[in-house]
Image (cartoon, rainbow, N blue to C red; front, side, top):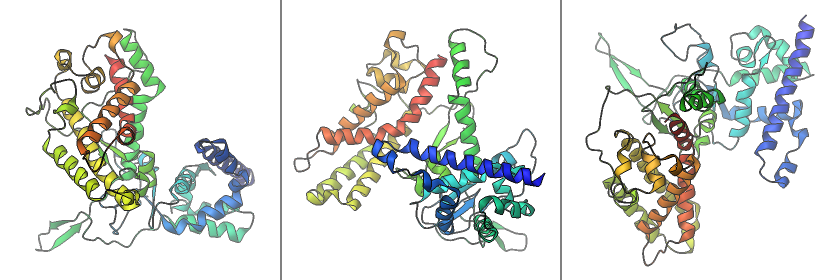
Length: 437
């Protein structure tokens, strides 16, 4: 029976490697790039040798310090003790949450793609369980059988099991000044030092739930049925007033593998009193929010002024060096963050305010998606994002232009492309909103 199970385990591992190969091919954007993806690189011995040679760079975690501060070097945690919390609670101790083992690279993110494949390997069902449960310490008695699957050579197979297990070894508890630290008082007059960690496994489980509820085929069909006035056996759920945190900026892979999968986004459920309204938020006036409503915000004026001064200072041929490009990208990202924050604040206004405004069509439908816009005037969500991104690019070029540092169409297009990917997920939200109207 074990022999048949081992043969089945080998087949499941081969299927996993085939999926890794196909994923690599699908990511290649040109025929030339596709030809560079060599099938032999994904043979069992070759792939394992390449990936596990780099495994000392990686750490498997369910709670990580990295989102707190990118340079923090304190402890991380991998949760392996599971518990049933009932129907009303959710936590990392639950099996369906803790299965999302995250991986981050302790010395850079050059191999994050392979780290992602390694994380998927841990979820592969094999020998009646998962690879992760075998190597992380919960079912170590299965490791000799896993070793036979990982290599025909027993010694190499055992070594590979140990290499996989090492990713789950706990850190020596430690903290540092870049980490969040709380001193908790004790009755003895002493303190416990508490170091909160980011629950990356829990965040990813919630992210997958939200993705399923918002953008799955079933949810889309249920929303369409509602729009058409028909019944639907599945139904759907809405999650209003979500907030979003962003980690890693334009390089989410620098934080961790799961953060890269999420595009650096972490959604937060609202923790606010019911019917809360920000009385300082007023509907924008004029044809564009970039004519004053957004651009006159103090922080936006401060950031655009700082960007203009920096580009003026660094003008000339040296403007293309990596240090200048990185700092410029950071300032632009902060302006984009302010724009996303502004859009979120406008969402607190009562639906329909834009129907009496002079806003451009795309901006109106972005900022007031629940308004009863005329059907013939409605734009596709992707078109809304493209137009608003273009408006943003043109405004930013104009805002930072000087006589000595001219900004033209190329720069406007660059700023548009900086914003557009970050609005892609908002486009999906808009489609759900518009379908539900």
